Image (cartoon, rainbow, N blue to C red; front, side, top):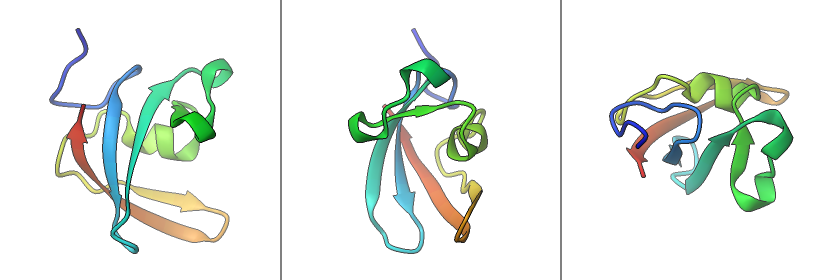
Amino acid sequence: NLPKDRAVFGSRVLLENMETGQDVEYQLVGPDESDVEKGRISVVSPLGRALLGTKPGDEPVVEVPGGKRSYELVEIL
């Protein structure tokens, strides 16, 4: 019974990379459960922290080693 109006721990989200237009789906999980290959990212990772509390249509920006990366939260699944 997770909310569909904002991203929270356990949410599955559909993101669009604003630079490439590529869609990616992730589930927000705890640090011990994270597995990027399986689409599970930790809520303490830079992207996970940026996504917490966001709503569909929001565009979180994530600081990564190569610079900033922008996403759009397309949908909470």
